[in-house]
Length: 415
View 1 (cartoon, rainbow, N blue to C red):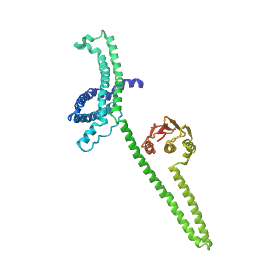
View 2 (cartoon, one colour):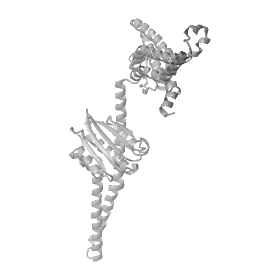
View 3 (cartoon, rainbow, N blue to C red):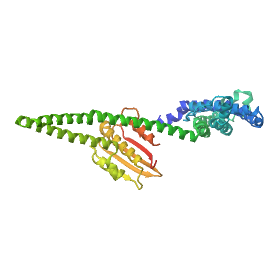
View 4 (cartoon, rainbow, N blue to C red):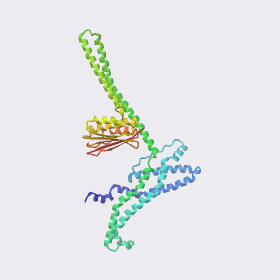
């Protein structure tokens, strides 16, 4: 039996099919609870003009948030919906603050809308499941109909027809998981749209994360610069000052030939140390802002790829120049990714593509290495992802075992 036939036969018992069937079985109870809540909500709205109705309405919104939490967890566990949790409800002290916070709870009102819109979606999913699973089981048991007096009139004439009806029932059972999965599409859309954080809340959460990441990245950079200056440049300057001081002492007694020769050696060493210190400072400044970016990102990346130890094919289409901060992030991303290719991938060739489309800068780095790159594997990708997120960008990593590796970075063209 080939794999396709085996997969078609084993689909009904797969984990996803079982979870979705369980979700459909729970749908009538959850939809019924939502319907009862909607009736209570309607009553609260009618009574909202008096002192009794407002607390009832606030309580209804809080209950809607709880019902939405239950529906979200069920959809996530059984329907395979990836929906994040909204922010918790935080109310100030005092009864009026709590009442106002509950009445203005966007998450609760979105859950109310979900309870209303999910009624036809639940009916569709339940009808599809009953028709496919129930109808399939009923038709599959066609040869047994004659043994039940209540079904005797449904018995088809003859075993050949019964066999055909049973085959049709088997076909329905084989198609049932796919039909139920398709019928739950509207349920998944509603859960993803109405049970997660509101769009404004998602934006605020991303901005808060970006602010935290920016502050952390700035502190890390300052510490690195401080460490490089203290351990490298500052130590060399101390040595330079000591050498010049010793040379001055020797020159004070320049009437002795050996003293003059020693002073010349000290001055030569100080001169060499000064040039090395200047080189270190130049490298440190280049790490803060690469001077190659003064001529644009395309020229900087072309120069970077030309100096790479392995062959790199570079292709760029930049009709519009990005903002300086975006250029810097794109340059550092390319530097880090090419370093990973050289150090870890074992690749013989790499390729870099840079595009500007629809207000987005897309950077794609490919290599023919061994693969296995992922955030958290020690390749520096976690810090790279954090730096990208500070500018509201995204990174996608496709690196199966054995390669190839394709890493795509998208950044806004302007901040």
